[in-house]
Length: 75
Image (cartoon, rainbow, N blue to C red; front, side, top):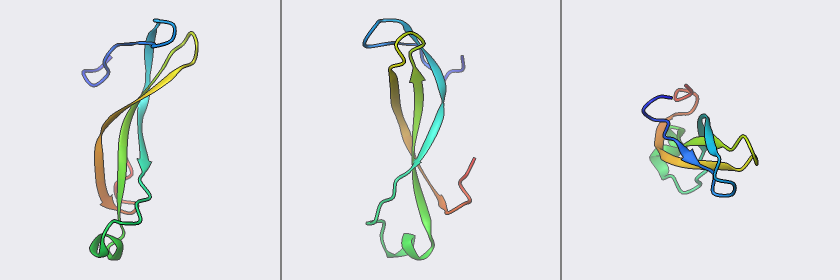
């Protein structure tokens, strides 16, 4: 488990949750401003995803925002 992955207990069954991965969601914000729209700058919201191996409950922990030209920030 890396430093970014913090142990968590499931809120439902109190089992230790397992870190699944970091996931980036496209924000789909229509109010991003004229320059971001013209340059096609996309905003991605970054979350760590944890899943309980017992009851399958999942938690999304917000980590921050990534802005990049569309297609350039994919990593």
